[in-house]
Length: 119
Image (cartoon, one colour):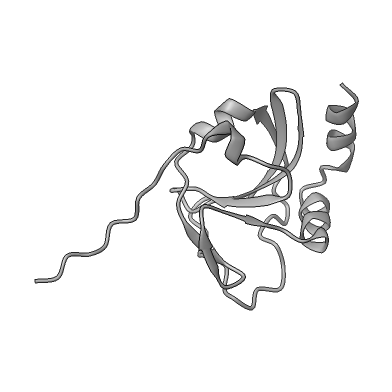
């Protein structure tokens, strides 16, 4: 009898969190870090329970999802999982400029990002 491969979920180290990266939680929620300043960050969250993005996805999964602001340490404590994006498997994936701009627009975070960076 073959055992099912168990996916290892893990929290992140704070140094693994960077602006412009996409993460995928154990609750199947995508999170794109949009800005960081001091101890705080702003991220775009998708809905929980979302299906993994297909290799040919067209839109980022943050439409009508309000941005979130939290401490970096709080963001890091969530359980994250390795996921496939742009043909690679990793715990985080770099977004291109267009994908970052789309995530910011989808969750209406432009003014919040400006306010965070001005603190």
